[in-house]
Length: 283
Length: 200
Image (cartoon, rainbow over all chains, first blue to last red; front, side, top):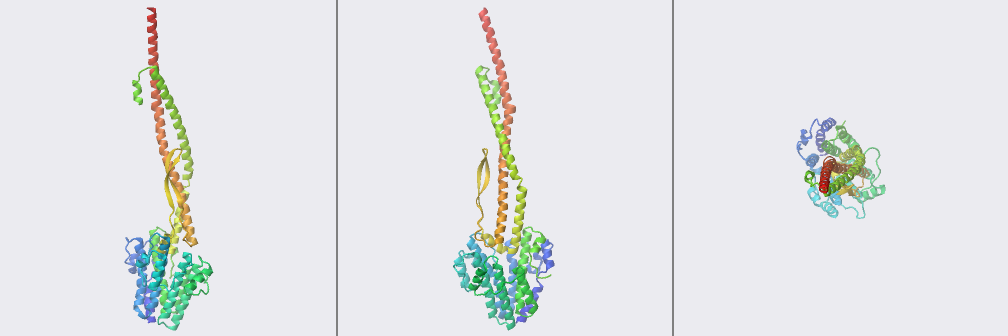
């Protein structure tokens, strides 16, 4: 079954956009809706709707993988669950800020964006995440800053992913590779939050989420390091479940890139500025 | 009294005295208005110095916006919008402020944007840059609004001064001259009549 998922992921990866596609999009030579996967995006759609549709494409790709291998779907859905964790952070900012209306990702296996957006108090939000099974525990009350709470949600996602690895019937080697990937992801989250929190605070938040931060990785941005991790897994495990992890990283990067192109063009930014902001996975 | 009505005034010493008072008042008014025009011109010129900073303020704003847009792309649209929920917008008031007696609408910032919930130093820096640029633009806009009000007042003052200079004062001077001549002629006539009566 792992091989089947990997083969499907290879097929989906071959449809991901390449550098020339991004260049054509950024220069305005092509429109996003000209690509089959993004044909649901209409030129007259408001920006929010376009962004939502871009992320729907990502969700549909992961759904396709998950539905093709029910035994492994727990892990594959867990990959997409990062959007739910992101939604939790986005809604948390809205609740604490008390204004505006954020765009939530169009995904909800545990708690959907509609229910999340109805939460008006922080306590309500945590209870919702806890009762739906998205979170196993909630942040400590003594954490005063938003950064600590958001970091907790990021670590909780890594823990969620690592737990999903344990539950799926993957081979020992795949399981080991995916657990290592989760550990690296944990380090990347720690590195990313160490820009805003002290190392002690990061370690404390990670512990509260049930994780241990081992070593802070060096060199490159967390996004670039995640891509490097994906490339490594792609090369070492081309026909097993870790390949699905690599595909998820690439598909997520594509969703972010297409979103950046759409937003950049709507803001009237130049093609060079848009291209500089992209995270390109292929030469 | 309308300028056109001066032609129908009865020639008498009383009318002459009234016309001279009116002329004195018109000339004093003209001098006062000229002084006010001078002061307002100086005020407008000093405000022009502030407006000269418009190009720089606009450039600063465009650059700040460009850097915010870069951040917006990097954070992603959902992330960026959610971050913007954490900022409370600045509080501004539109008040009438007097510039040498000329009321002008001016923007006054009563509270800067509240960014206390933000934790990202880069986001805070971008907000600071954008707010700084926006505050500079507000200053320029205030100066421009004041110049517009002062200019309108200068136009009105010039119209009044021109009217006094070209119509009212010459008309009063003409009327005084005419009444003086008529009064002098009447006095001469009375004098001659009195001498004839004395001779008879």
